[in-house]
Length: 212
Image 1 (spheres, helix red, strand yellow):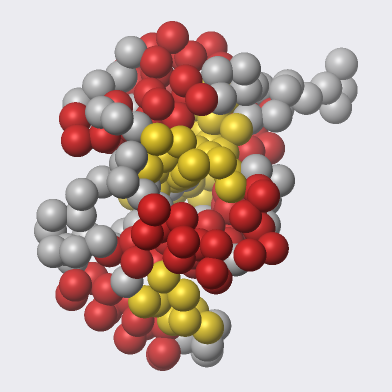
Image 2 (tube, rainbow, N blue to C red; image 1 turned 90 degrees about the horizontal axis):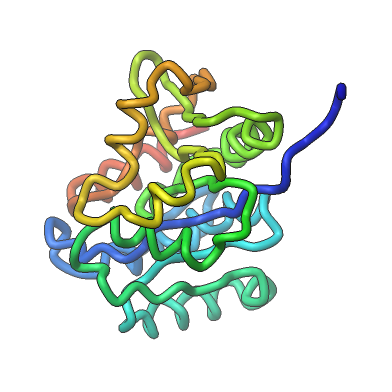
């Protein structure tokens, strides 16, 4: 049937890393975009909240400082954020993604992003969501030849996602099922730009100052 859509996917933002390369909790580091300074996590969340009514943020059990920072910056959106505790977060991204899927197991798929990517544009997040609703098995944005984030994963892979562990996340799934991956082309490098080190943050803030 023309126009038929599958059930809505859930939004999962992975925010449970230890940020060892950064040296402190990078998600609380100040980032300035469009003349507004917020913690890194807040900028990323805003892009997702423009698309989804509810965003599930996977965090370590000791996430109180993140919760408070978000509540202070976005009091009007607190009701739209579900904090998912991942007791096994130190095992890696796979464990975090599994926890996010387990918390949203009835969803029609998942749009999965990384909390340390503050410039992923809302239209790209929306395009990934739409592609899943229209029946894509896997979806990802590409900037040139590079695959970026977020990644869309259909509900058919639910059991495999629930078994994930370690630090590879859904990478093996995407590589194995490359022929089923729908690519969304974009010229926006925000889909590639994550913040791993203080120098990454400095470069990002400088690029924001230089943007028109």
